[in-house]
Image (tube, rainbow, N blue to C red; front, side, top):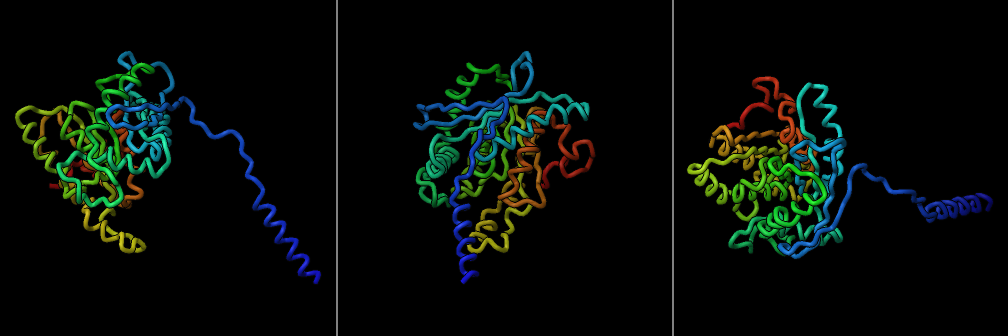
Length: 323
């Protein structure tokens, strides 16, 4: 009986500890950051904006700017990388203008944000009835979203901070990478650097490649001035053993082949003012390739000489994509 009493007492103590409220102190905050909500007449929704500002005075021309898609997921990481940039550049004796980081996300719950993303990050194809995305209820709103960024968000930021409008980058992963490609192919003057990580080229029968074809034709007559970084994880079309039925999509979507082939075709365009770099992360799949993307994308935009391998001829990081 004594043993039962001890067991009962232990069980009650466990329940008591489990039900005790977790103490909550002040939340963790990131220094020199702020956020604001901005309603859009173009998208018809409220966007939440995260902003990280470099320490010290702004350059005479203003701060360079990285517009980071999926800011709710990626902003804290890129913000930390941005803070480390001045010390890294100084250590290697490389000039680097530290950028403002602008993370774009949504006001509202996660489910609503995911639906908004599915619409805002996909190109306005004539037919979106069978895109391969069975989750997003609406798709094809990329032009409205880009109009929001350029016509509503950019002026709102310029009213708060000194910006260098000649040095801007759009960076995104997955659907975000798809949006970056759409922006490059349809409005290449809107940013001077385009960073597309693991772009969802598969979407809607690879519709974005029809935009690419028109872009290449126009560029033959009117050369484009832009810098482009394409990245992908080397394992992105190799299913994980635990993926189950989802694993078949990894092979079908040809994430690695699509990105590699696109990089080769864009590189073949040539021209001093149109630069393309392709990076493949051998040990990463779609769920991890966003981490090296943020690091390499930041360096590509601010200080390409700091990219790993950039100082060694023949290194994979410095070679053009295979053709």
